[in-house]
Amino acid sequence: MKLFLSPCKMSQYCFPAVCLIGLLFANTAMAQKAPTLSAQTPARPSVASLPWEALRQGEKPQLMALGTFHFKDAGKDGYKPRFSVEILTEKRQKEVEDLVNRLAKFKPTKIAIEWKKEKDQPFVDSLYGEYLAGNYQLGQNEIFQVAFRLGKKLGHKKLYCVDTDARWFEDVPESEAFAQKHQLQKYADTTYNALYQKLYETDDSLKTVRTLREQLAYINSPERLQIGHGHYLIGSFKYAAEGEYPGPDNLSGWYNRNLRILANVLQLIENKNDRVFLLIGSGHIPIIKQAAMSSPEIHYKDVNEYLKSE
Image 1 (cartoon, rainbow, N blue to C red):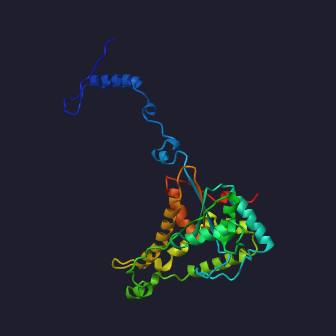
Image 2 (tube, one colour):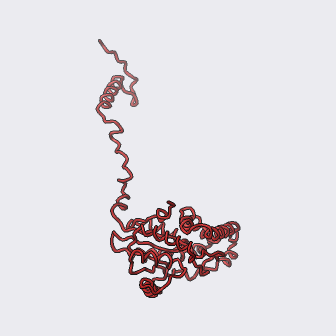
Image 3 (cartoon, rainbow, N blue to C red):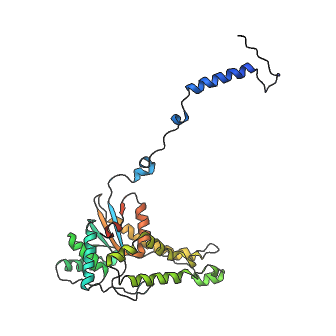
């Protein structure tokens, strides 16, 4: 059979029809030999093989923190409690014992407490030693009731003070005068301070009717920790003008203190088998927890695992 081909008009943009047919056959043959796209595209790596996962692998020391309220409030915080938990009553002492038994399951190798590292360690060493010797009856403070008892139960010879002072900016403008000067009053809070006050009043009341475990599980829940931290980020936090930021600058000292506390806690770790338990006011937890969970050097253990109802 003869194949008749009619040429195109001669042009730099046109090829004879035979060329087009040749190209079609060539492309078909190449398509049959070429691997499929799926074979050329590398498989998506699993989560376990992602580059950053190498930072999380391996056996690591552990940190677990329990945020608490003050069993015997000293009136140093912004909200002044109206109610007491009467921690020395028989009922509450049973609840303390239950809490200590739960925390003991974490098997901490070191116990850190919210007393000043630079100032209070000698006092704690002396008082804890007297307690172990049977010469001191525990007071109402949560450090006595929880940390001292947990340490004795686990046979620890020492508790570690990790609190410290913050470093603050020394030249921050006074907030309200700054707001008036730069007409920033529109950022002042008119809603949320009142709502936070009601939240604190509710929490204060609830601690009198809940068990100790229930109240601590509540204040250490992710939702309560997150919304509680939000109180620092309303109203005057937004005060800023002409290169001055009194709102954020006044808050930076709080972050500074908590990061210093975490540094003191991490210094307690000596090997991969260490398990540090930190007892501290619940307001400290959001910053410390976020930073600790980000560290590749440790594994942060959620205390709620040990506070769950059974």
